[in-house]
Amino acid sequence: MVVVVAVAVVTVVVVMVVAVQFATRADGNRQRRSTKASTIAEKSRPMSVLPVSTRVLAGVLVASAAVTAGLLVSPSSVVVAVESLAANPVAFGMAVAGLYLVRPLFAWPTTPLAAVVGYGYGIAMGVPFALGGVVVTVTPVFLGVRIAVGDDSDGSTDTQAGEREREHVPESPFAGLFQRTNAVIDRYYEAAGPLRGVTASRLAPVPSDLSTCAAAVSGVSFRTFVLGTLLGELPWTLGAVVVGASAGTVATDGVGELGLVLSVACCLAVLCLLAGPVYRVVRSRQQRSTGSR
Image (cartoon, rainbow, N blue to C red):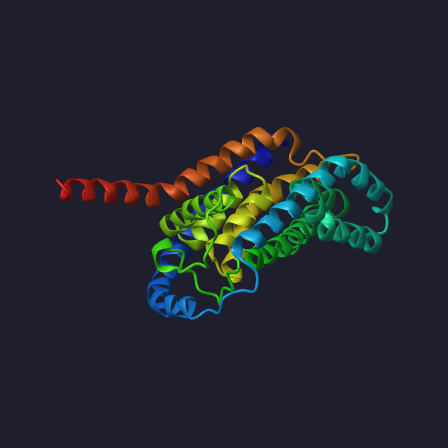
């Protein structure tokens, strides 16, 4: 069973990587046409009421509170209570939907919830249900961070740090850290592209909310964020749903024994997606270094 599921997941990852490559090429032409218009719109954006540093500090405090709440309230203790509702599909669906809605408040991972969905609905219904749940549960985090950093994106995907005028941030260690982090995120999405960048961050075995925050800060459009989330979370969701559907009782360990195989497959997919952008960045730096001599 594990071998069959592993082969299926690897096949999905390969197909997804190819699809992202083609979609990224098509999206690149639209990005270049919209760069100039999006830059003008960004420059004309009115200043926010609160400084960026104040809003980001408030966001950090909220995130810290969510992590603390997640440590105090384990998802296993909550999910086990849902097992008794599995015989009633409607009640079970409402309970799981509620878990997806409150998940950001406790900073729980999304994969264990997909295993719960697989336990109650099986593979055919569980995969689309769990993917929809992932989109729903990461949307408040994305919009909250977007508001916190004061980036009212109009759908543009311009992430070049040199073309975005930011609000004045008082000189402080916290503001400097935020600016450096923001610069790293901008360079990543500038090199990888919005769709490829979101998909790769979702495939990588990193906390879901971390990749969500990075996408929100970069200025990625919400539509691209949702598409990249669906593509990147598909292998993880599929593996967790299959594990949950084959379990005798509801489990909260996510992909279980498939974790190592799935992690390796997704890491290889990330390498395939980012190999081209990394090569172009390295080559560009070498050309600039050679030209300056």
